[in-house]
Length: 140
Image (cartoon, rainbow, N blue to C red; front, side, top):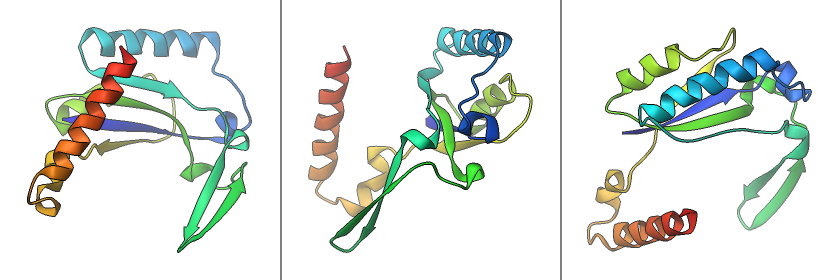
């Protein structure tokens, strides 16, 4: 099972305040444990929303909204992508994270087979698998 671990933004992350050297070290140690255990597939921090944009879709109309965005509690400051055996295992790993405050969201990643009912012939799943293989090959 793959889980997206979504680290929510706060006033500090949105104002561009970087973690302290100690906080960086603690997170580095934690990330090392995740990698050694074969859990972490990816993980990144994000710049504050002033460097981002949103695109709103309304039929054929596209509207671009430049950051920053006001609702800090709705913003993402970083993420991990984890491979684990169960939701409970993901929760146990997350409980060990070196955060002092805040909230982190854990979401199950939809896999190709989850869409079998929408693809009775299997052709769309084959196409998706080919795309995933292409992306993986580019990473290596």
